[in-house]
View 1 (tube, rainbow, N blue to C red):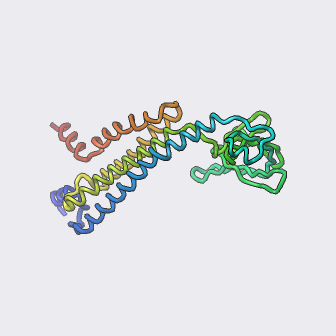
View 2: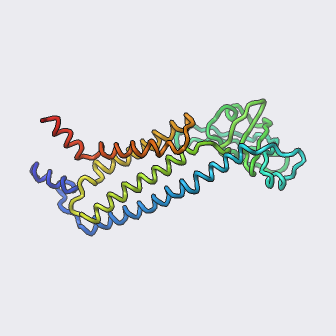
View 3: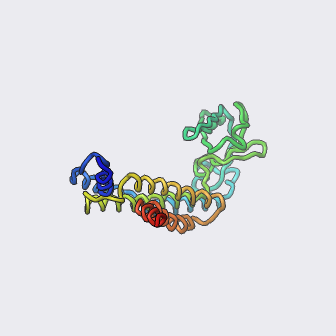
Length: 262
């Protein structure tokens, strides 16, 4: 294939040397992308209308909860939404650092036959100090062990509500951005199946997908660390993504290169 033929093939969004693909197959891919966009829109809507408000209300309820009366029964504790305190004995602990497969947990038992596992997000400050047979005090809220304590050292479990709504917003924003990319790429395949450029996976689609992940975590995590309101995540992330979409466009590179040679 000559250089001119290769350029024409790339201009149509087709791999060099493979010729024109079936328009029916391209349009079918477009339909799948649009369906994926609809699913992403639903996920975005759920993130902002259900998941985020639910986590916010749960955290506020937890912060407002007071210690349970000393003689309160289990039914009364569940009904009044108070913070219970119960002693447990450590059976064993598991601390496994391994990236996605990291495991931090403690197996506890009480004076009866109950035995259960409490998960944690990290090994410290208490979990890595615990040994089998140690006596610990657990704070129980809504039937979940939310805090484990021993000798004045306390550690939140994975079940403890956290004020990290910024990541809820980041995930919702990510779903919205994925929906936008899938919708545009799908619509192009339906409208002009023989002329996809620049809306092809290589390089534009791949660049956009990577940028979406970087923007979501690059904005969401600093917002969590600094305590910024959750709405600052989409307020900052959407303009960033819009600018990145322009910069990632292959035609932008071509125009910038042409200007550089003038």
